[in-house]
Image 1 (cartoon, rainbow, N blue to C red):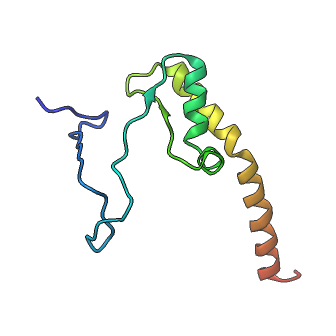
Image 2 (image 1 turned 180 degrees about the vertical axis):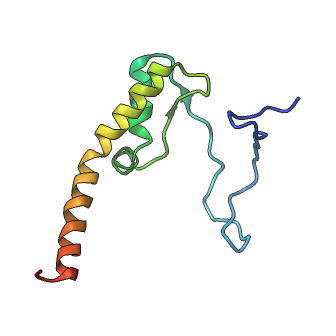
Length: 109
């Protein structure tokens, strides 16, 4: 029986090179390798931070720590909380920038 994900869809693994929307190979692209699965709470927090916009920008590379599909609820909770906290600075900056642009576009009253 084929391996399936949490949604019941078959898991597709490929070693073919990545392609753009026109079907041309993307030069220098390599297939994404799965990261190390989090075994404890600290690793779950690291996985949560690595999967945020802030974590990706600061590291400059894809996450190396991931949550397994069978991770316990507290690992998922910790990873989610760490992700929200890590992305908070970008969220605040976006809110300030968006409100400034929105106010300027709407005009004074």
